[in-house]
Image (tube, rainbow, N blue to C red; front, top):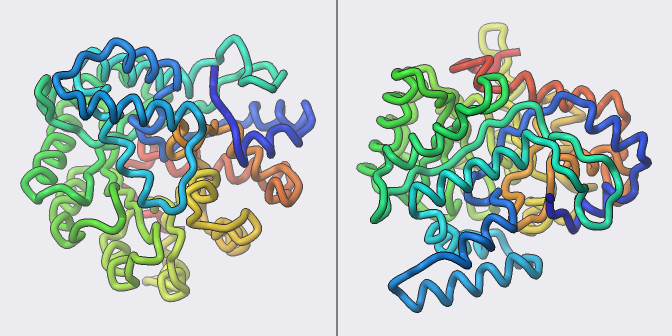
Length: 369
């Protein structure tokens, strides 16, 4: 059973049964979902309960993190989110735990479950038709980065190619050596026929030097991988950094919350008769709960919709933000202030834009409209 609360639950509660059926009927792609941030609550609790650790300190940290997630996460700023993953990573540090987590995350998106979330009465349906799950490969005491990725891929590939694929994430806190290994593995696995479709730059937006990673992402792009970058997530991310990332010509952009007018002008600049319009991965609940936006009314998605710029609606991290893809779409359709009050036709077009932006059907394609 999914867990849903906060903005997405309020929006979903406001919709009629007909509205919910409409949203469920739309072909939808989930293109920005982090594996370790999307673990179903019961899966995390089960694994934590049976975990044996040497360190009392990390055991206490896991118990505290699980308790925070169970009671509902409260953040004052986005930087408070990243320390939670130390405990989650400890829980998923073995191949068996990672395999179960991946399986349960994929099932939560791609399979209908028997009961709706608590407080709702609608008939459950799959959250999406297709998912590009993303994760940063970690070397632990129990597995290499290669084993990490092949473990995840073994679960991804139990679904058809038109249902699931993998994006390999590079954390901006990584050393160049570690980043190179991640990209090398993504390229090699893709060449071996495994279902790796893209690269992602992620992690604490206040950390790291992006120049470290540019040549490695270029290698990935040249090898046929789609490129998505977390960009301008906070006010601390500089204009210079965002311009440099846009020079990589990514296919999609994650969040893009604080892109300036100068950045946006690039999306409408004529380049030999073509316009560069990377699809924006929009995560409404994540932005609201991490307080990077104050309200849906002021959300940057409004700019892109008005200017006919491609967007896709995503969950980001369903575990801490207690949302579902249906709940995110509910925020498009619900009347203000609970939602944007879009028409069904507008919501249908947004869902179609997400399906069009899949790396699985565009490969390494610079979105030129």
